[in-house]
Image (tube, rainbow, N blue to C red; front, side, top):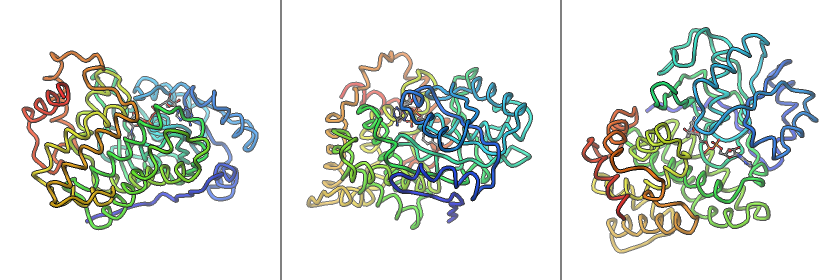
Length: 377
Ligand code: NAD
């Protein structure tokens, strides 16, 4: 077992008010650089941060499923202006791009050169990660997921120095999040927790984080989806569940759901959370024979108590399907992906680094069957 969590987590409603102190007093930084996306400008948050911190240099071109070309452009810019700290503001896309920019600030070349584990020579700049969605947990993980635009492949760049120095987690930042993004990112967090609990590298420590995250998310997601602005407790619990799920999968792993969603995200630019939500119940159905008892534990955390572990697992899968439906997650066949693409998706999924972590060995043929079942259900 190997558990690491070097990121300091500051979690409270209103935490954003302490940003200036974290920058100057805790991290002793003098020249921070903000990496974010255009959606954040509309929330008015950047203006508020500027009022607090003084005028910041901002890169706001990050797109969903952030691209290597964009990250490389930001990297060239930071090498010229030489900041001493990167602030990551946004969902997983902005946070992952920011982590990659922090690496390029201190290392030559392009982000593609750093795919894999600890390929960099110099430690990246410190990062303060401020999540504004309730899904990825990137604020507490050591990985940056960037789409290699040439290979149409989501690559992982990871290393112990890639953990953000500080995760400033403020559930109030979710108040502007549109309902569909609450739904998809909340289900993304649930997927992280479930895969962390059932994947082969799970440990007693990651189990604690994963099961607590599952409870928090199941008890808050629907309420937060209906009215994230007024439902303070649900908002806080959902955000906490998301960060705790990040700690869990960051030290355990994800499994076949992510193998499929990362392939689909890179090939067709489908939002990460939507892809995870779509495939979660079908991968669970496939995985039940390998870890029925673990699914029964998850069912108990979700308030399910049937007569046998198998019945618990079946009921859990039904519950997740109906939750996705209530939250307005589209069906796989509604995404406009042609069936003749299934072979490529299955092949990419099989090659994904997390495939060996899935609790049940999963072949290309198995991925094809999962895709087919999800499409026809
Ligand atoms: P996202 O970052 O792509 O954001 C989705 C949209 O929501 C954007 O348009 C953004 O502007 C908008 N948005 C974000 N916060 C908002 C707010 N508070 N108010 C209004 N609008 C807001 O979505 P995501 O699901 O958070 O991130 C997905 C990315 O994260 C994928 O690329 C995925 O691969 C990656 N990911 C990384 C890790 C990791 O550990 N590094 C883990 C899981 C996923």
